[in-house]
Image (cartoon, rainbow, N blue to C red; front, side, top):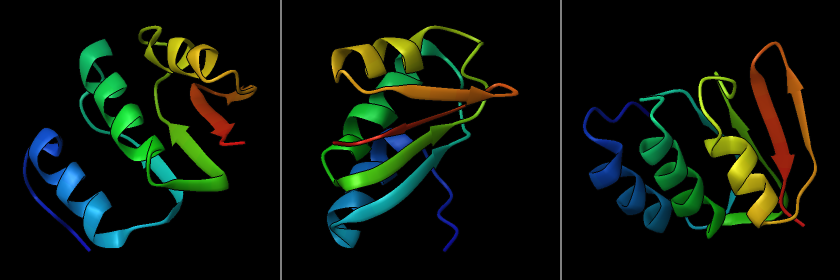
Length: 86
């Protein structure tokens, strides 16, 4: 499903519509604010053991800060970060 629009508008609606989410991969606007918003928004719908992945996690500290706040471990491979909801 392709949805064109600002994820600050579209992502909350999509997460509500879908409900439980198993995996989410961020690869949109790579500002700290935008990445943090997407992680926070999707985390609420991510199932236990669900995966949050993000491209370009080395561009700023949003991924590391988010993962630290939620006390999850992370793997980073070639700039792509992965963490799992516990």
